[in-house]
Length: 368
Image (cartoon, rainbow, N blue to C red; front, side, top):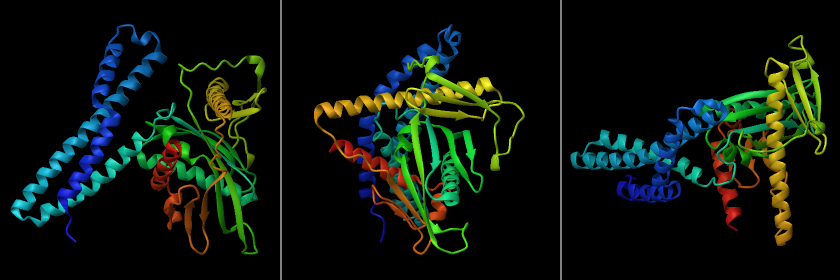
């Protein structure tokens, strides 16, 4: 069936106008002008943290404006291309228009997802922690598979990813890992991945060829910024130092550079061993600890407001996605119903459709 180009263009313009209304190019231009004034101040770099925040915000706002305005130009150019192809009855140009239409539809859908993220911290970088659960070697192996999945996802998008800490299992895989993703809306995007993931497969670690079910937990928190204020008294923190370890528990350096911080009032523990010095690891661990405490504080405030309002809703439930690597070969999200029959691609980082479905699902809950 031939593509109904006028109808497709009309639908894309309607979607674009909805996106434009949310992102508001005029407001973006105003914000850019204000940030440019701040960036041109002669004493800007006297405060390096503030300077980096200003230049990062300016870069992000400029990029956002270019993307929004670029979509309108692409729509206009596509409409002209289609008109020329139809008038000339040029099949080759019509095929090119079809390809451009498909790409534009996909890019607009991705931009539309961005408009659904309006949470307080959605724009921030994300700190993700994966912990193995029940299932022995299968669970620790599964945790390592999830770590690779998210790092591959970041690589596919060109996002900066940095592994901050890894606790290796004695057998296969990892007990836990913490990594940071630096990208626009990283927290808003990855926050829908939080929860318990379940793997069902024929275990490669047993001899009975029986199906094994194992679990891993994914935690996602926003990265704290210098403008956030979470005071953590030194008396509330227990500090342990130790040697960084590699697979099988072997030491990977000869100095006690790794740091473990325990926040005594909450019981939150953060370990860091990626940096070369103890001072750097302690600073990185403190940032993650403050991020977790900030999120905990906001969660407690939100829970108290719900209780006072008498509006207590059920949460997602721990188990949010199942991965089947035997028989049917399926990955299924239990919240959204979205599924994929290609687990290999999913574990290689092809999770955008799961994330998009999760963001739309979360927004639908917010509107109920």
